Length: 178
Image (cartoon, rainbow, N blue to C red; front, side, top):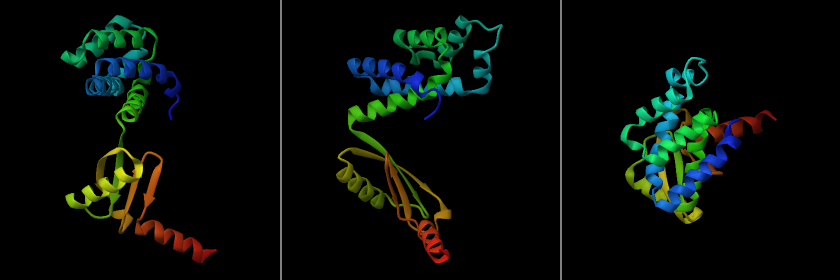
């Protein structure tokens, strides 16, 4: 958790409540992701502390960067974050919003790293098994990592299932050396 996580919490909670009331979770996810991406750009973030760039100018740049994506509530959020000097917390606001959204929608993203590509059929089996174990709808993010040698590592929230050959070899080496 970053230094801005505590600062971000009330903003994420407020946006979550707004999105929940309006039934617009996907819209607000996109808004926060776009704002966080813009604020994370070096050229833009350098303006946040530049003495010759005013708050209205910074807000205008972010609002223009989002184009038609921002409605009045989105513009108000940008202006509030600028006024309170909280733009550096945008990444954390977006992350915490997604956590709240996932909890509300009973979803979770599971990351699967495997030594070899995983077929669609195996991905479905993994997702079904995780849904049964976690009691949530699971979205998989699958990537290949040849350094695992064989097997896979699955991460879903606090759950980590490490079935990689690399880890087994490391455990064996530690057992042999002690």
